[in-house]
Amino acid sequence: MQLVDTHVHINFDVFQNDIESVAQRWRAANVAHLVHSCVEPSEFPVIRSLADRFPELKFSVGLHPLDADKWTGTMATEIHDYATSDQRVVAIGELGLDFFKADNQAHQVHVLESQLSIASDLDLPIIVHCRDAASEFKQVIERFLAKGRKLRGVMHCWTGTPAETQWFLDLGFYVSFSGVVTFKKADQVKQSALLVPDERLLIETDCPFLAPVPKRGKRNEPAFVHYVATYLAELRGTEMATLAEQTSLNASKLFGFTL
Image (cartoon, rainbow, N blue to C red; front, side, top):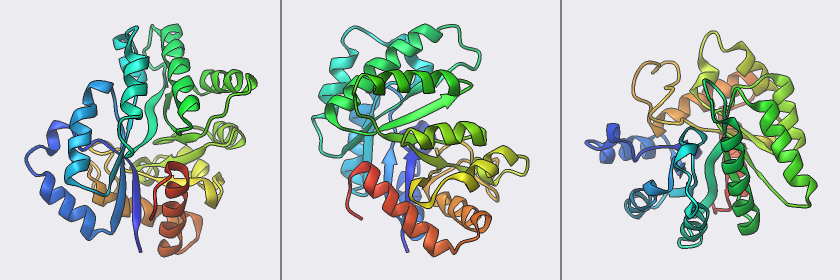
């Protein structure tokens, strides 16, 4: 049995002192592949150096919506050039919309649309961060697709309603669940997790954030994706090994790597 953690941030400082031990634990937990998300292009060299150390790591490049004000006139070219510079780049992102306490919504949409064009041009999937903006994000995607552009990707660390979940399934997206689904009061997330078809389901930690039960409150790490998978298997009434195999296959299909 193997697992794929489709969203990690192991470049963060909280892993600086014990990254080798963290890697030993994810390997012991049968995490065979990891997708390292990128918050802003300046992270790219460090993320690439981590992939040099840990061959199971693939990665993305993009600008997070909470950092949209860092967008410059040259950043689209920078993201494009980074994405084509290394075969281990498997996605553009994390990108999206975050309207929680945001006063730059129009600018976030502009930055999102620019990155969607890069992803479409390069035929790379997108890793989507979407908070308090599901309707607006849906509208952006629908406008983009109406132009005849192609797009695929994953709604990462998904916490939307079942209705919102169905929107993005209908648009062809995968849906990824983090440790949030294990939280006692996350009823809406659990309902959405039951809605996603087997062939569109992904799992992640979003480490170092949102550690799953029974590690809640601690620093999250890739090994803990095992708890997410175990919980989802029980919730969906399937065997852990079956869910691990299916989600790993889904990840390899979306991100284009060999298991």
